Amino acid sequence: MKKTIFEITKMDCPSEENLIRMKLDGISSIANLDFDIPNRKLTVFHNGEIDQIEKSVIELNLGGKKVSTEHTDQTEFKENANQKKILWSVLAINFAFFIIEMTTGIISKSMGLVADSLDMLADSFVYGISLFAVGGTLIKKKRIAKLAGYFQITLAIIGFVEVLIRFFGDEKLPDFSTMIIVSIFALIANGICLYILQKSKSKEEAHMKASMIFTSNDVIINLGVIIAGVLVNWLSSNKPDLIIGTIVFVLVVQGAFRILKLGK
Image (cartoon, rainbow, N blue to C red; front, side):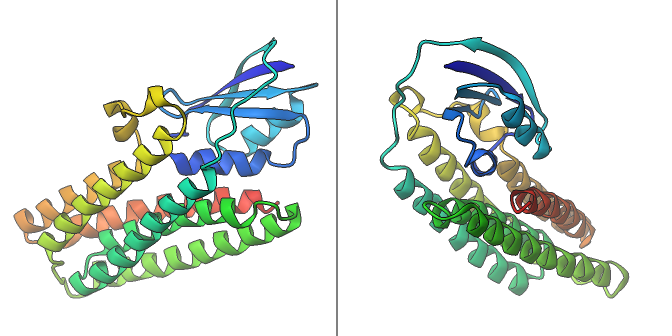
């Protein structure tokens, strides 16, 4: 048995962990995957050469880089029996906030909230693929990934078009208070998701470190929408909302391309 450690610089939330798990699914030489999200490290326990595994990690464009490979005597690994239940929990939270943010975003005329709702939907896709592809064939998993990726890109393009219309059209101020309040609740929801996933790993990780929370893209996006809401009120302009919306749409498209890579 060998143990190879990867540094993955863009692995800053649990949805990236699931992307990597799905990408490496089906490689028979892998015995176990051990993720350390706060330190952006992945430890792969495997037999034989690392070439195929390393290639798959690099293909995801998450900044994956092999750090070391060494022999290990460890041959037994703890399986998390609650994995499916945990994935269902975070899927439900993310999808619920997709609906909440999309609805409130449309009502309050906030593109920041609409964009963040798509980011929540993107995470839901990742957890959903992880769940529905369990026990299924590799072809089935690839088909689901392709559908999710293209659907996500389509929604993001529609969002970009709406941003352009609002940028060059009549200025309509979004409801800044709705932006701030809903984003605060989304921030709490992301924190809960991260806590659930980290707590499942081991008792030692039950208490989240601040670094775990604030290195997550999702949390940074939520803070961005809150700041945009404050600026909308302060400047009496919809431009901060449109700017944060554009940034998040770009991140959503990047996430979609990562999901599409699973379909190759």
